[in-house]
Structures are given as structure tokens and as C-alpha cells.
Image 1: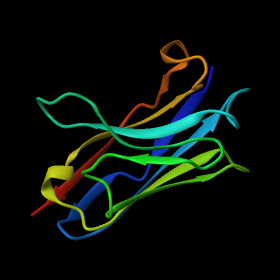
Image 2 (image 1 turned 60 degrees about the vertical axis):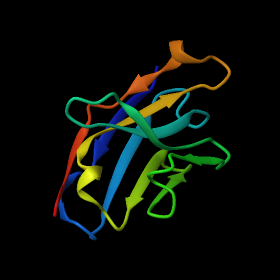
Image 3 (image 1 turned 90 degrees about the vertical axis):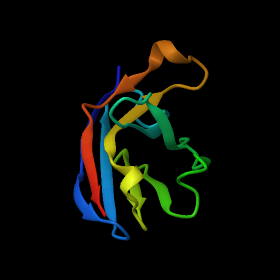
Image 4 (image 1 turned 120 degrees about the horizontal axis):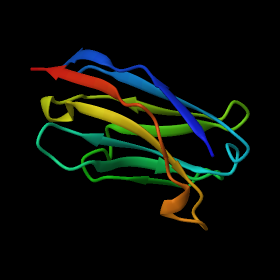
Amino acid sequence: QVQLVESGGGLAQAGGSLRLSCAASGSDASIITMGWYRQAPGKQRELVAEITSVGTTKYADSAKGRFTISRDNAENIVYLQMNSLKSEDTAVYYCKSYLPWVGASSNSWGQGTQVTVSS
């Protein structure tokens, strides 16, 4: 099983930037796909972006052009650089990891970090 520890949330003004980090540990940490999800009050958890172990990325439409996901494979850390923040980006952001060939049974989640964007 993989353990995930997130950091970097907080308060930002609209138009500002924040960077989230998620450190993975465990025997599968170097081969997992890692991603960021978010959940706003009263809404379902949704994908923001994810990155495979070889650097293939996927973004939600709401994140394209503003957010960048990257990965340090040596340290097993994934980053989410969020620029041009909007009030609608306010949510709890969760780091997720999984093994693509295993599926949902391999899911691991971080504890979540609050991002609040003030307009």
C-alpha cells in the first residue's frame, strides 16, 4: 500500500497562485499513477489532473491552461502548480495514487488540503 502526505494548501487571492505537493511512500511509490482531485462543498469529488509514472498527463477542462501537474520520480513527489486561481477553485484537494493495471482496489488517498480563493 502507498501512503500519501499532502502539503501546500491555503488562502490565495483570485488571479494568484498556489503549489500543492504530495509525497508518496511505500513499495509501489515509483510505479503508481498519481493525481489530484478536489471536492467543493455540496459537490462530488472530481479529477483535476493526473500523471503516470512515465509522465503522461491528463487534465480536467477546468484546469487546462492554468494548472500544471509534475512529478519528481527520484523523490516520489507530485506537484500541482495552480495559477490564475478563481473562486470556483475553492475546495479540499486530495492526492490520489493507483496502479493502472490493478484499478480501484489499489487506490490510496491523502488526507486532503484546503484551498480557498478569495475574490
